[in-house]
Length: 240
Image (cartoon, rainbow, N blue to C red; front, side, top):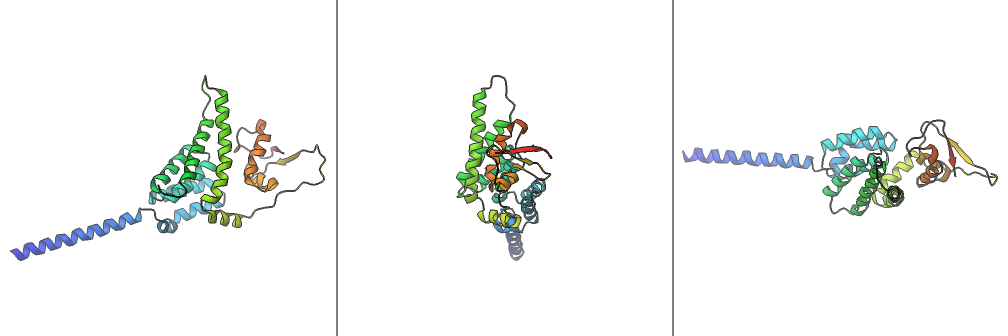
């Protein structure tokens, strides 16, 4: 009788140990470590689509990645930047930035990401309809701060968010030389006719050799551009 009880206890111990090992294995699959993330097919597709300029396709694959590996802090950060800078969705961007900070509270990029959150908040405030009684000067201040933060964070990002990735993307896509205009009369005005794939960023690179110069072009054409993302094919832009 005692032998039967002993065997039963041993059997239950083995079952418990097996269950613990299985649970630990499942936990490792959802921790979002670098190795798990790099092996994820949807994550690789998201990054490839983003590098190719297919931002909405990248959005789909980032969502699939985070459903499979919800604790992947790096994927949250990259998706946040995509929503913030390419998709014009500051609310979603703020959510993913905060997820990154929660998952990686000791990251050396914490201060930069906190800056991204503040920038996205200002971007959201600037998009809200102006309510009756809103101080126009306050709205203008928010918009000015938004522009300044975008420039500052563009500089910070080059040193904080995967510099090796930025280098690889530039190498694969190519960095066309700026257009040099010579022998122009002093009062000549440069113009650019918007093509199908043009963005303010690509136009800035073409004429100035730097993406950050998009704001200069946007400011010079504010009367005809409701926003930086609403270019029309065939539209004439002044290049200051």
